[in-house]
Image (tube, rainbow, N blue to C red):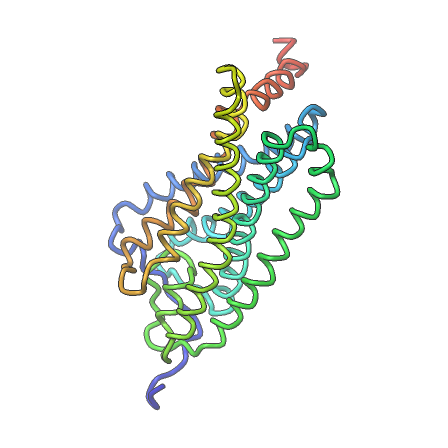
Length: 313
């Protein structure tokens, strides 16, 4: 640090500064998406809670995923909505750290949870006779707990290390929330070690669940191909098609963001991919798991048909 540089006590987001005339429109659009996402995931959680036929390992993990998605989008979008309405788009360093803690913990937990869901589909299709034993309630709880513990331990350590860096200068973040790389760029010391650690954590703790998911689905596809009847193959594939879509959306943007070299990062690409995994993907998940899931659609129809207000009408 130079002697004439003072430490930052707050950061300023400048992601939407060039879109002043569109900020009200963006506010309305993101608000609608946020309400839809939270409402859709709440409906899924409540539906699984009240319908006994959905009390299975697959839907236990789906409840965890829906809860994660609600928290995930809530860690970013409400603040972004406020900043679209106010002129001064600032956040304290402590507030930025808190946002990064929550966001990164939830993100890594989702990576691990998606791997647990892939394992559940692997057992259901490839080991159906042992499914109740291999996916007992105790095993499901352990897999979910391991996902949360991994996210909390790994990302708490990484975020704590990032915020031991001194931040100085203008404190302008070329982003709409406190993501890792835009914040690290504001440090006034050499951050090469931090960038190596960020990359290593991404490779180990994002690619490892991704590798497990790929291995599970390779085995699943081999098993599905060996099913003699076309109807049996369609039924087997339909039980995991929703999960494949969610994994593709989530990992596609995550890998593009966190496994790029530093030179490939630009504010424009970072913002575009961040909007995908913080806003668009959580909004699509309720749609994917309702419109493409026969059991969920049937359970939703039964619940709405039992509604006394509907019967009176």
